[in-house]
Each structure stands twice: as structure tokens, then as C-alpha cells.
Amino acid sequence: MIRNFFCNKEGAAANILAIGYTFIGYGVGIVLLIYGNLWLNILGMFVVAHSLIFSAYFIHEFAHGTVFKTKEFNFRCGVAMGWLNGSCYASFLDLRRKHMRHHRDRADVITFDYKAFLRAGPSWLCNVVLFLEWAYIPAVEFIMRGYVMILPFIDSTRVADRKRIISVLVLRLLFFAGLAWVSLKALVLYIVAYLIFITVLRFADSYQHTYDAIAILAEGCVPGNKIRDRAYEQNNTYSNLVSVRYPFLNMLLLNFSYHNAHHEKPGVPWYRLPSLHLELYGDVSENIIPMSRLLSGFHKYRVKRILSDDYGKVTSGLQKADGFYGAVGVSFLTAV
Image (tube, rainbow, N blue to C red; front, top):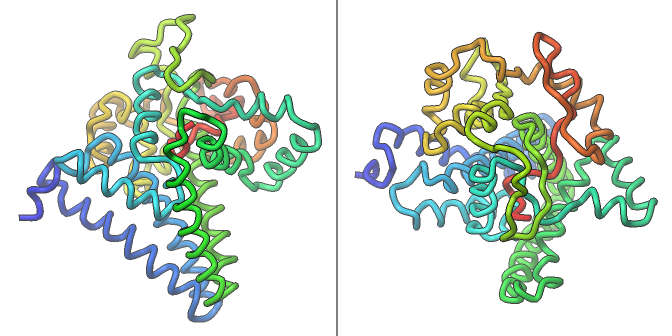
């Protein structure tokens, strides 16, 4: 009976298991942060981080409507996942709208240009951000999230969102205060888990496109300075697979790394992406870049990419990603 709620009945079991793991893992992980010895605490930290990662990628699935038959179910579950990972300061509808623009316009469309903000601001602020990024603290991602929170208070067209932002902030602060009251150690480990979650998502996001990052108003138009057709989309999209040899490892990111297949057919659910990828590209596509070949660049360009005017270049051969700096501040969890 429950299978009838899902878009595809054959995917009901996979979705139930993965969604169940996300919520149960989050709860169990927090319990492990509070109780037990140090090794259980560390295990809990990684379980919380991975549950947050799954919650983010399920927001992406709900935005595309690939899980449940009805918009209402996808909406409600998207909101619930947002409460887990802290993206709830933006409404689910705003998150969905921004992500659909990414597909429609074939560009990384943003309404807050953090690079212009840092360049125009005091030098000490830019230096602090660059230092934090050098130290592997994703400062830009928190700037983007902070902007989501303050936007209703500086934009008169978003006044109606102010009460919701304040309510969300109060409830989340109460949660963290309660966690600190039960165990300060648990709060510290939760913060570490959250940093791992943000870093993993940003690593995946960094290397999936060589699109243009275009700062325009929410309803503005992407400049027509180039042909952004389906060929452009595929040529500037990359499948940064966790593993080519062991495809099941891509499940660690809910198969989000099969990005060319996702962009070719955005309505295909996460559990079908490996077979679709194999059908479309096989294992020898020029647009496949294993994550193992991106780790050194992620480290090497961790400061350079922050203010770079582009994402670098992808060439060919084994070293094709050596000049690929990567994107910053393009997360689908920030509706700006």
C-alpha cells in the first residue's frame, strides 16, 4: 500500500531505506555524540555528518519531484530535510526555484555576489575569509547562509519572511543550547560534523560544472552572450564519481556525482542514475573525473578559487583536471 505514495513503485524500498537512514541515523548519531566512549562519539560524529549529507541530496530529489507522486509530499519532506541540515532559513520553494534556474539557464545563477562583496569591503574582512578558507573552514558557505538569513531584513519585498526567519533561528538556537546543556562535548562534535557535511557538499559542487557564475536579480535574465544549449550543458558538466571501479560507493552521495546523467534527464530518480549513466556514457567518457583526481586540486586551489573570476579549465588526459579550480558558493541549499 505504501508503495503507491511513490513516483515509481520499484523504487519504494530504496527510498524508504535511504530516507529512514537519514532520520534514524541523525537521531542515533546525536545519541552517540552524547553517550559512550570517545570512539563511539567519533562514530556518532560521522553518522551525523553523513545523515546531513543525505538530507541535502534528498532536498535535491524532492525539488525535482522524483520521490513521491504528489507535490505536497515532496514539499513536506523537503521542508523536514531542511530542518535537519539548517537550510530551513530559506523556504523549500525558494530552494527549488533557484535550482530549477540552474537547469533552465545552464548557469550558476546567484543574487548575492560574495566576490564583489569581499573586494568592496575592508581588506581585513577579505583576509580573514581567505585565512579561514586556507584553514579548510568553509567561510564563504557561511557568508551565503548568513545572507539568506538577513535578506528579509534588508529587502522590503521580503518583509513577510522575517517572522519565519526569527522563529527558525530561535528554535534552532534552543536545540543547540539544549545539546550544550546535556553535553558540551556533543555540541563541539556536532559542529565538526556540520563542517564535514558542508565541506563534502562543496567538494562535490565545486567540480560538476564549468558554467558561468552570473550575479543577477532574482527575476533577472541570463546574458545572451553565448549559446547555452544542451550541447553546452553536457560539455560543461562533469561526473565527479566517488569511484568508477566500485559504483556502489557513489551511494555515499546518493548518486549525485552521476551529474551528466542527471542533467541529461533531471527527472530520473537517484537510484536509477548509475544505470542511466552506463547507458549514456559508459566508463570512458571525457566528462568523467574521479574524485581521487580532484583532491589535490581542492587542496591546492582552496584559496585561489575564492576570488577567481572563473572555475579554471578542464583539458584532456589523466591530468585534465589539474587546472580546474572549482566553483564556490553555488550550493543548492542557499537560495541566493
